[in-house]
Length: 103
Image 1 (cartoon, rainbow, N blue to C red):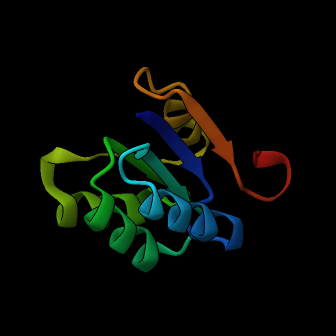
Image 2 (cartoon, rainbow, N blue to C red; image 1 turned 60 degrees about the vertical axis):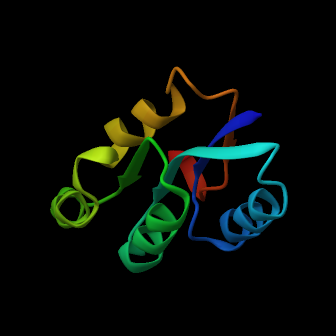
């Protein structure tokens, strides 16, 4: 099993990566997901894949996600959130699918 952190899970590369993970459930586990502002899609992804942690750009949106997901998923925000996901101890691979210098 390969544990993957996916930074940019709601963009085109991210959603394609998630489809691959869904096709290979015995081989790929999504342990971290990060998105910029598409909180609705990030929430759907988190509910379906139950990662250890997620991150979103806006701290206020992170609070909303915490309320919806409960204590099973750590919720982070901002650049610090991306760093926390990128250094998640359980991750074997970090796939960076975010635009610009944030990557």
